Amino acid sequence: MTKTICALIAATALLATAASADDSSAALAMGGVVFTKNTPVRMAGEDLYVSPKTVRVRFEFVNDIGNAVVTIVAFPLPDIDTNEYSESAVGTITPDPVNFVGFKLAVNGKPVPFQVEQRAFYKGRDVTAALKAAGVPLNVIADDGYKTLDAVGGTKRAALFKADLVDDEGEGHLHPHWIVRTKFYWTQTFPAHSTTVIEHSYQPVTGQFFFSFMTEDVQGKSAEATDYCFDGATRAKVAAMIAARKKTPGPNGDYLNAYVTDYILKTANNWNGPIGRFHLTLDKIKPDNVLSLCWRGDLKKIGPTTFDAVRTNFAPDQDIHLLVLE
Image (cartoon, rainbow, N blue to C red):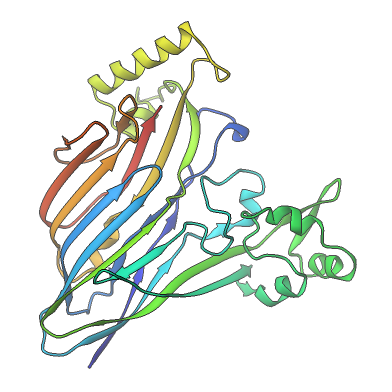
């Protein structure tokens, strides 16, 4: 029996915006299943759906060899820097401090349970036990965790200061210093000469900010051109939306609501060969919204809010950085 280890790779991406920190939130980029280079299992197909509210992925894995392949599959969430996010809000998350993206898993159409590992680190050392001893949730960005941290008193509070896990922001507010790492994992068997379908879904950590056309840099390029690849039609549509807002401004003036959803796609190159058939669906949620991203290849409109693209023998060389304007 062949044993390999595969992992879902995720990375953190912060969104620079034209608005102040109080008016924005950061997006976190997550991805899909990644195998190590030596796995004999190949990906015959991937169906990926991305919207600001939901990510759904359906993978078809084929094991062509005569032995079953048993793997430990992990879905690590992006690192959460509690120090950073105490000053700048993270994007949309669920109240659950562990599964804060609402991750769900199915194999061959049946729900599969998974285990969870969540630990905290500071300057390279594991501080999970120290935080639990103080009664502090590891992931303080969810479920009013910062309030729970502020409420710690007495010897437990003193222990946090002694370990340099917090500092005092004044008025009783504590500033955390640690990084939270969360991963979901399960054991997966790929039977010999067979296809296995793995599906997962989650709520993406979509960032939000107020959008107006951004100032051009010294090369004459703007963020909407370089980061989201606005074409002429998109730019004209957005200009018309902003002009309409100026005539009847709301509480945010003539700004549009902007939502950014990131998905890491390039790590698919760690699989055994390219993706046999890749099908991408993008959803802008409302018909009047504007969708834009940098994507090499055609995107075809298939519904009032949806666009798709199909590639064969696909080895992605870019990630998805989706902007939706409302």
